[in-house]
Image 1 (cartoon, rainbow, N blue to C red):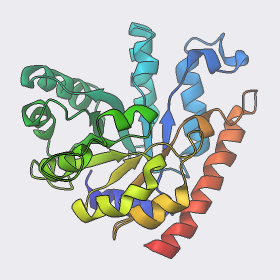
Image 2: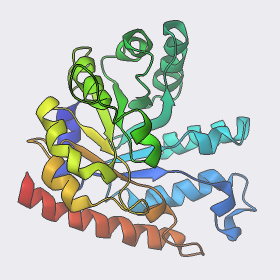
Image 3: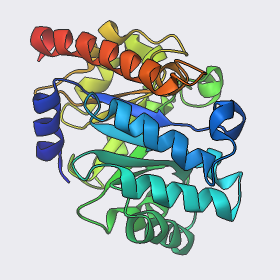
Length: 271
């Protein structure tokens, strides 16, 4: 996939919604707990309910890794069930010395066949390059995250000017173009999007923090959208746990449709 393909899907569905498959075994409705694979059965129904309204799915690997081998099996089955025209993101936040990153890249791009993986850039270019050796895949670098603790390092002012996250954006865009690199920018930092777009006008941004974390979709869209939309706005708990009973999939469908309809308005207004 490349940015042109992603934008075509955004235009077709009139949505830039990414659904986070942060599937917690403890929150799966009780009537699914007796199935052979509750995680997959839950994800299967969520995908069926939301696929018309989203352009990406983002499994958070922690929810699968915590279950050991069974969790990895559920993840593979989930990926196999996602339609081929929907972008898939491994929310893994990997990043290590070169040979280790090479194995991480093989894991997510060759074995699981994800379209993208989130990567922490703190160790520098040699920890990221192995992911960039896959020209048809995306590396999504953590830039400015939505959690409170992001201020501990990401917002630090540098003696040379600017802040640390801005330096990450500035330096890393020399490693690859917008068809291989995306960036994580949290929705709770909406006031920063205009400045970020001055540094990286063409790259897609993966935007967590809308919904349960309180991010403002309108502000993110107004300040973050570019000529190809350039946004994948993620909602996890607000969609997949919109309901907790037997009608959980219907509730997820309603929540994703509502969000997609709001996104359609912003595409008409800001694109």
